[in-house]
Image 1 (cartoon, rainbow, N blue to C red):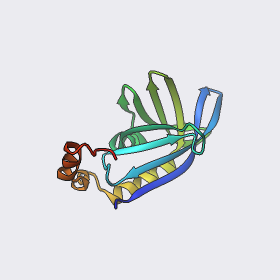
Image 2 (cartoon, rainbow, N blue to C red; image 1 turned 90 degrees about the vertical axis):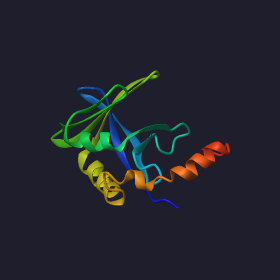
Image 3 (tube, helix red, strand yellow; image 1 turned 135 degrees about the vertical axis):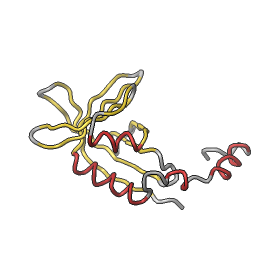
Image 4 (tube, rainbow, N blue to C red; image 1 turned 120 degrees about the vertical axis):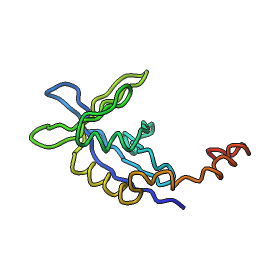
Length: 140
């Protein structure tokens, strides 16, 4: 069994420079998927939205602007507080979200203690995953 680290928090969906609305979200890190972070928006709703992207992207984005394409992350300030800005783009639209930097950094620190940078590949069981794929059992 692999360890899962979760953190529920309230993000702000930025509608304009003057207006934002709260969006419940859950950050998820799974040791069996060590290169990725998962974000679930609208936690508790009947149609949550799931995003998955590289953990390194979020780690870097806490300190400096990073990413291109569908996911971009950068540090910022809003209402005098440090935030992590997350710009997401899909064929269905785009969103700019702000998360409390302290909460994101604390959650990331837990993931980095669990699986330190450079040790992600050691968490993978390539032979077992390949066997499951060849047996048609991948993702079950």
